[in-house]
Amino acid sequence: MLEEMVFIGEINLQIKIAFRAFERLQSESTDGNSDQIEVWSSIQLFLIATANVSKIL
Image (cartoon, rainbow, N blue to C red; front, top):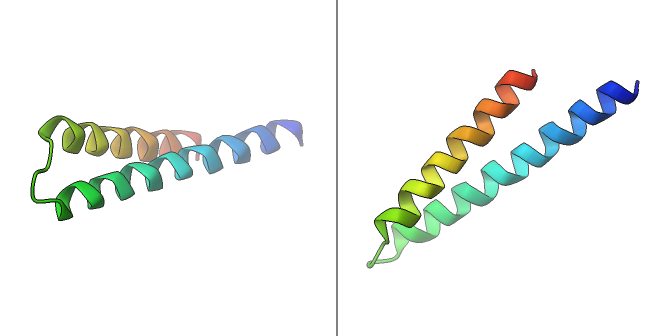
């Protein structure tokens, strides 16, 4: 039971990270002066977080 709670907690954290990265990416894309490093780091963070969820599941 404790293991399941730890996994669920980590999935929840990774989903929050993915949403935050997606929000950053959206705000950068609507801005006329988007910073390429910020865009690519947001994309990378989103992909890593979603891959972590996939690994846990």
